[in-house]
Length: 182
Image (cartoon, rainbow, N blue to C red; front, side, top):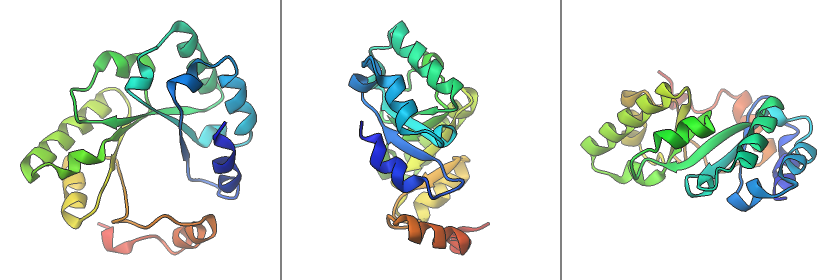
């Protein structure tokens, strides 16, 4: 499973969570639960497994049972790529996602549509008990749209380039990007 490299780098960090994409093929495999449990020992409570709406199409009772087993171990689940089409409430309720990751294309919409879509998605996320993460934050205008819409989290190069574990630790110890505070 592709989880192992991410886990080895993450073990040194104490608090941040880690997100790993999994496919429908992974979720339907006989050894899915044991692979995750064996690969992520010690950090299961900080692990988010990220799936797309298409990956959720085969929501068989066995897949849902696997997710429930992993949830009991502290694993959480994220829906990736949301926001370009109408959100599927049945899917959100069936999978009970803890995190909804908005597709980065939403931030490329014109200003009014961007703020409207963000606000709607933030409200939907709150209604289903999930946090909303906006991917693709590339400017101060994007950052302000997230604040205005009360989006929970943002990610992209506007905040920081990808960092090694050592540089990430130094970044976190320094207090992060103070220019965004407030």
